Image (cartoon, rainbow, N blue to C red):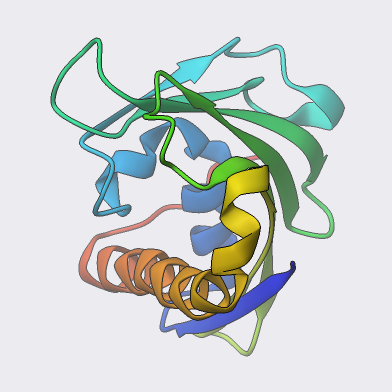
Length: 163
């Protein structure tokens, strides 16, 4: 299964890229379901990535469910970032074994950009009978994440870091 969602943001691509990629560990600022996120391996990312990945809490319980997101592709020039989303301490009923996400930021002009989110969730065996339902639910969930990015980016002062 592959799901692609897009959102236009009224900010320059460089600023949106900085938020998505260089501030990768700050997902909690714009991802509604994430109360906290922290960097893993800061300064040790591949191909110039600012970190190896991030750890995101999925609840306020510090020992509760999380996702470990490991950067697998990073291109400052192409404004492309890919990462594997791996569940940690998640309930067995969660249908996703893991997810691979690719985010690309494109300029649409001086003060406008587009973020393209492509997700490739891998389902657990028990989830396949629910495939048609999940095929409807996942795009809505990913769309809400991008809407959160848009709202945060447009309502906060963003700066593009000097690369």
